[in-house]
Image 1 (cartoon, helix red, strand yellow):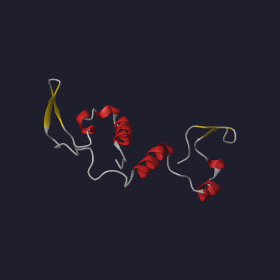
Image 2: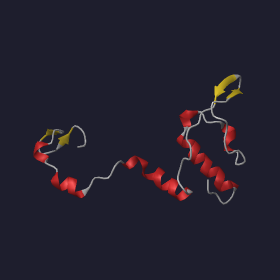
Image 3: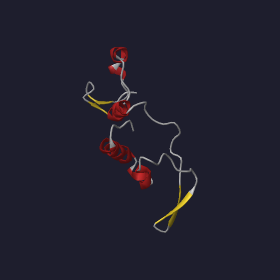
Image 4: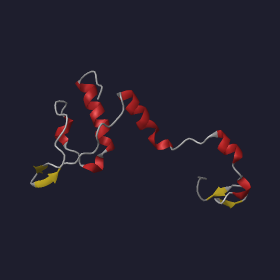
Length: 109
């Protein structure tokens, strides 16, 4: 987590856990002393037997700053090169629906 203190660690763990809301992550793994659980092991939690899963091996960024940079740009999509835009033939665009590209069905691929 690359954290300087427990407060910073907790804030960063909250950010990471927020990315996996639907995965039902083991809450005790938030403990900074616990590095991992045994994958495919079984635990009973609130009367329910759950299988532990390995989500990743050697995951992540080299630092918290790298992690945040990737997380903050993850939804931006792939960049479009200028030469692609300059060479794009708008007259034969299959996505054009009305007028001279006034309304398109999807972004060109």
